[in-house]
Amino acid sequence: MITMVAEKTLEDIPGVGPAIAEKLREAGYNDLLSIAVASPGDLADKCEIGEKKAMDIIEGAKLCADIGGFETGEDIMERRKEIVKLTTGSKAFDELLAGGLESQSIVELFGEFGSSKTQLCFQLAVNATLPEDRGGLDSDVIIIDSENTFRPERICQMAEYLGVDPTETLKRIHVARAFNSQHQILLVDKAMELAQQYKVKLMIVDSLTSHFRAEYVGRGTLAERQQVLNRHMHDLLNFATLNNAVIVVTNQVAAKPDAFFGDPTRPIGGHIVGHTATFRIYLRKGKAGKRVARLIDSPNLPEGEAVFMVTEDGIKD
Ligand code: ADP
Ligand code: MG
Image (tube, rainbow, N blue to C red; front, side, top):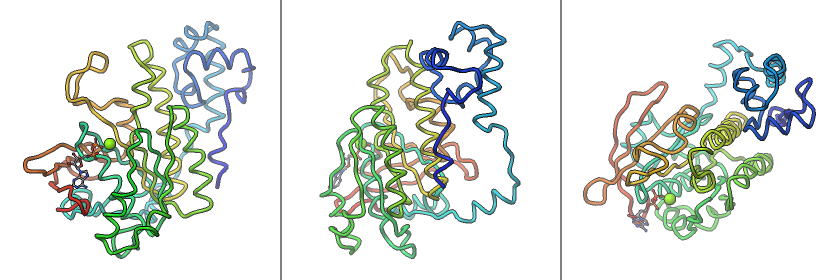
């Protein structure tokens, strides 16, 4: 199982030794995929090598990364039969998602500060420990917490409301703080190890983008940030596929226009995060303590909205 994850490195490409590998990495080509899909001209310019050499490297990367493999629709259908769904705790929200959050996918929750992204993560963590006949996944949960907002007290409140033992619930939730973006990426590898020991069908990254946003400042760093974020998203998708798990990531959008990132309603990570995420949900505050979830860009569901509440007991209609 784990072989899919033990990735080849740049040095595995024929004709790429340590010196060229270093040039590639300096230019932001951190993995085989980013090289396989690069244009020869770009790669040649950025690494100061000839275009012929660049073409050879790209071809080599395609072979190493096994790009272009096909599988039949039947194989994909078989895999999709394994998909399980996780309840949000709100009927309207579940209906918006045709029954809940799907495994083998990445769900992106984006919205302003205070739009309840973290509260929803807590609720999903508690729900995932529930048995399947209650909308749960009967599984342990991994939370990568990059903003230090995990609150066990909230987990206890939500568990109590659902009539499950708070301590038992906390025992099944494995939390790691990510101290910077590189650490956050490494924690996905750790999570993969943990998933061999426990049944983990929900992994949460709250927030996916805050470290990236803080560390890669200014326009000149945008391309590199997107490359690293892209690789991180693919690691997460890999986890989702291998473990038949739901991945939830959060992404904060600024309330006010931002000099660096432009349009405030556009989540950071832009199209990289958006295209890898299978479901994107925009959260905003409504009137009288209500919250509104809007489904955006789903491959098989119509766009729509659901209204829910954040209460002491958790997420409700
Ligand atoms: P985000 O992660 O999107 O920045 P949060 O998920 O932290 O936002 O949402 C914070 C909001 O959740 C608070 O503004 C508050 O309205 C609500 N909230 C937090 N704790 C409770 C609670 N115990 N009871 C009711 N509402 C709560
Ligand atoms: Mg939060």
